[in-house]
Length: 335
Image 1: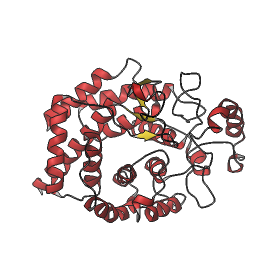
Image 2: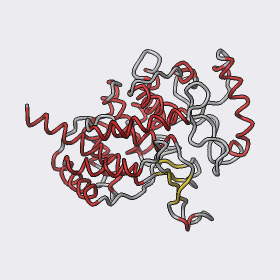
Image 3: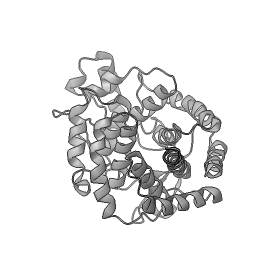
Image 4: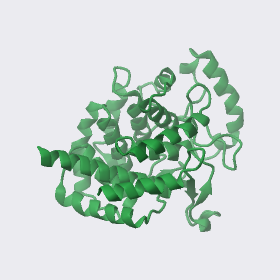
């Protein structure tokens, strides 16, 4: 297993660009005019990049640290107004999009985990609806008036967003548990975030009915929630029973990307079902050693006409699953 993890890390180090970034890929459904292209390269996205680095955070190998340190350079380069990030920078070949809490939280989490200081928590905490649920897009609204500099920046920024705001790609009031769980990974469990945590737990009582706007599988919600739980949002332990029930009704995913997500989520929640985990881990290990990494759908546009992923993201999630399995079961054997 250690050989498989090292093989993945070697692959990621080779694929990492000189500026520290990883390639982002996009695809479209067959009925879309661009659908025949299948997966192809797009503008580098801090979102794909930050998720790759998130998966490596608890792997103690020096190469994982080296990849992360180099990767933090790219995140810093893509920072916008005082610790804010968006899926793509303006001026690329793709749509201009607003600042979002998904990118911002993940990039901030990676930087703070690696010794950098980010001063944006108050802005994220203000980007909520009347029920305390985190909104996906950071746009100029009344809760941000208390921060005049940020409000003026967002007012200027919105001039570049008219096309996408008029399209079905997004809505200004968007919110969903998979995004909010990433915000909570960064902000943690506090008196100011508890309302959102409780609402996500309620949504996960019926995971197949949970709002999925920019992710297309309830498994992703559970994965994000379990990742936040592993990193200190202890109330998310309440989602473990819902995930166990969800798994009992769900066949093993067909692709290694979601198999890795499933395995890591089971392990994060301490649902150590060896008969369920062992075949998945063996499949992931086999894929790792053969370096047969492909791109799979992780993030989608609201209208489902855009999908994002990358082979490097698949590889990183496989490394995370193997390392988490190895660590948990090594501890169990020692005990």
